[in-house]
Length: 392
Image (cartoon, rainbow, N blue to C red; front, side, top):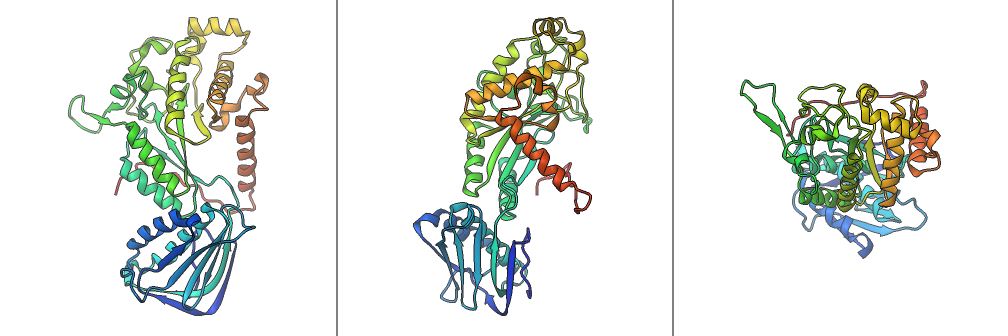
């Protein structure tokens, strides 16, 4: 290796003429402040292809340095040692992950030569995330942990966990057992076996384990519960919450479907309250994603309960019911110490309902501004969306 290859490219890399050859797992020392980050790195480096730690192991020192951003770090590679500097735990974690990236090239040869260098880095954006849709295809907790570890290796710090959609409900809610007993399973149309179902859901212990695993890697787990549209799985379990009463099914097709939760039925807010209580119990993240995208309004247009609700609220069009629901959901989460976020169309109409001063509105506006900057035609962009991902 004659250059420093890291993803993403650090803010500053100064490569020197000399290099360091590493054949054994380095010996990491750290102050008590960074003990957890060092312990995790020691375990991770066992998978680099290097020989076990020995007398030949180089010394890696993790030391504190004031004045660096919380997620920033400095990494000095010298001929006989390596020093990592950070002012906060997250920064030291990122420094160790950069070192891990450099050492992973030993996987093929059992050793690695790294140029001596001075590296400094800090993230440009505070929210650097990846999303996994576990509704349309159920993924095991082991796979999710593997994905989180890979994201953390590349300095991502948010795991957006898409837990519910038309094709399956994965979140356990004690007061509504049908969500997982019925809503978590769909007919597999790819087979010739009659009524063969696929799916699954996560237990509370599964979720706690994943959240703890992510926290150890300085990744925030943001749950998404998609409402009031994309709700076929809910309606299959509780058809009384729809406008027509059914019949409904957990969808085995992709698409946007006509049936949504009935905006004129107060019971949907009992459901939301129990969902949000569960989310508060399981997820320490300050954010909860409420979806809010691709809601079709045809059912609301013809539903007597929804029409009555519109009259009570003095609404002119059925689509205004969504902004009313959005504001109510945001307030319910605020009462639980959480900030609601959603897909961008969730804001439509909310400016009339005093949401513009809410954390949800401000957060989404900030994201829109960042996206507008990143979408500038003068900037190179790559759009990636992985579908039909299989566990390996």
